[in-house]
Length: 301
Image (tube, rainbow, N blue to C red; front, side, top):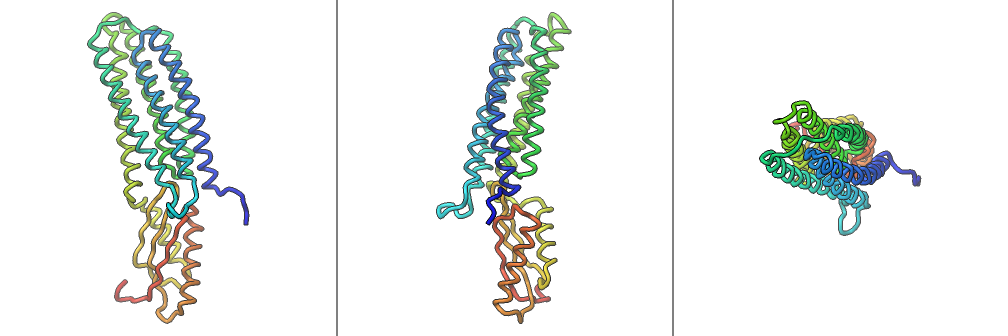
């Protein structure tokens, strides 16, 4: 048997590597933005540093979730550890909610407190941050699409949220500098807008994670592919029931297949194996396929 990694495992490994890279980048950016924000009198940058801090913690959570999810099934967890991915995504969402609340509270306090305008050089720091975070977000989201990882998707959108908050900070600081006296709180308003964006992204990510944790049916496209693969198998006359659930990056399929009533148990067993292979060929992520063989009864179809 070949020991070569499957495309699915390659995608999972790529997700773990990007989570590690994100951890390092977020740590560096958090320090840079915090120092620049404090020295340059730009609270929007300080808020951005807080977001990078949650990104850093989020990358640790995602990395841990991916490592746990990659474990093979055992006697204690016969369906594997895939749910660790969705759980990691939910934890990252909670971190984003906390960051949004903290940023919003501090932004409101800064708006009500008179202060100096931000230093113009802080715009350069933000420009670099925006580029770095958007590039990282695209890479992570691209890998998450290939693996179907909820945790990786959460990490990618977390990076993108950071890029968006940095863009909002850039606009706010620009307004504060160009507007002159009286416009100093513009960067604080930008931080408030950033907090709202983070909260919206957190809500969307949490819905996805909870859906996986509660065995929500996958996209209709997946169900259609499974149905087509089963019905396209010679000897299959109809399918009665089809249930699919997603666990991490894997799918578990439960399908009732109808065949000729006079078919022997031996032949029915062989046919079920062919159907299983057909489904797995169309969807490699279908690691568990349970076939229920039933006699074909036109009146019940």
